[in-house]
Length: 378
Ligand SMILES: [Zn+2]
Image (spheres, rainbow, N blue to C red):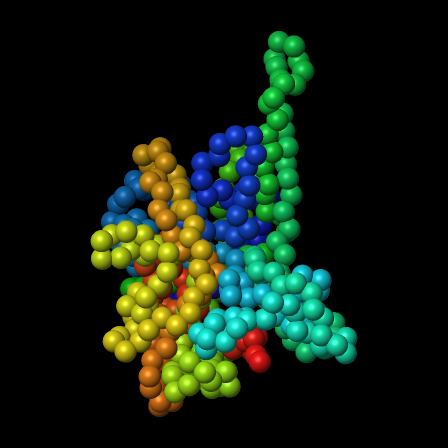
């Protein structure tokens, strides 16, 4: 069962990926599933008074029966790394997505092609970063725009007790996610465990957790509540079909091919046959059989660290593929494959990819509508 989780930020939250070193600490603008899982495990211990590691704890936090997804700004997805925005008018000018176009083997535009002012805009393009959400535009219609996360910087200094003045060189600053914002994500629960979850944490009941840094100074308070997840707004079958329509329009190398895409909505940790970390995905990594090939991709590596609470040591760093990375796969097939590919997409979105999935890594969206809807055309 898939639970929709809404998190209300009650006090500034600083989510750091690595142990802080130096005087300046930055935050992620989303909440990793691994932090949610850790905080919930600690809460479970306090709530039940049971020893951590008992059979119920194993079922809920270790065995893989419950998957804790990462939390993103409400209603938003990571911008795919293939999306380009107009540098002069990020919100109003058309988004250009290059995933399909690169696969077709056609040159990409170097400047904005928006025609809303009568003639071509011509401004430079830039990579879209952060989050995107479909909103109503001022000029009409709906479009993908950047969803900003509000952050604040909190600075403090150290006081010398003898002299009662600030110690020189002891100025610390932490950027944090501002309070009052809502984040959302999913927790996936295996069928047999739902009753246990409901007993611990009833539906529509707020669960107060502390996440991230500076918790002892009142930061990091987040209230979580869950409800049953609703069906996806844009059905996977529709998304797969739209992608085929766009691919057919672009022709060139996409002629006669069925294509599907995988876009990461959380970092993924994937290894090859030699156990080395991969920075890209092949067909086998996403459950595609023989005949499929990787046609185009936009990806970026990211380092994944963490703190091992029980052992009080840093976890060894893993190299992952950053959220927003996207991959297009193609196969010489006719369109009778569409129903089959929709089933594949549904299954992959439910299972995720790579390692440490119960901590929210490897969450994907198959055939993300943005790749077809915003595909850069001729
Ligand atoms: Zn423009």
